[in-house]
Amino acid sequence: MTDPTPTDDAPVCSSRGCRAPAVWALRWNNPRLHVPDRRKTWVACPAHRGSLGDFLEARGFLREVAPLPGSHTLEA
Ligand SMILES: [Zn+2]
Image (cartoon, rainbow, N blue to C red; front, side, top):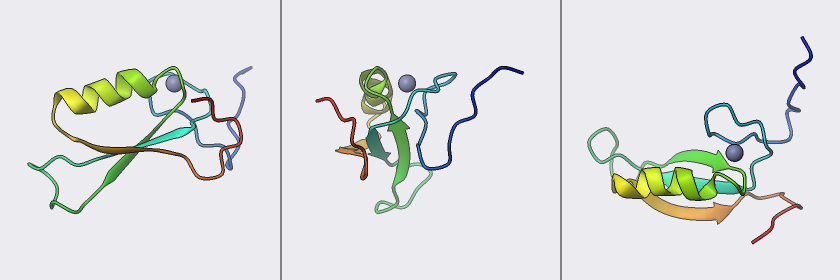
């Protein structure tokens, strides 16, 4: 039981198994499941922004990527 506990005010990367702080919001929509103006959001750390974005983009789901509000550690 030595796992660090993520704090509530620090969003954690949506990539499976990753606990890094997220600094990007990837907004996406699956046209087969969602109405056109619906947005799902994944959040990503710098290391996974590319892989998560590629996953969504390859399926035609990705709509926009934006820096997470409140992030002070953003590295472009
Ligand atoms: Zn990550």
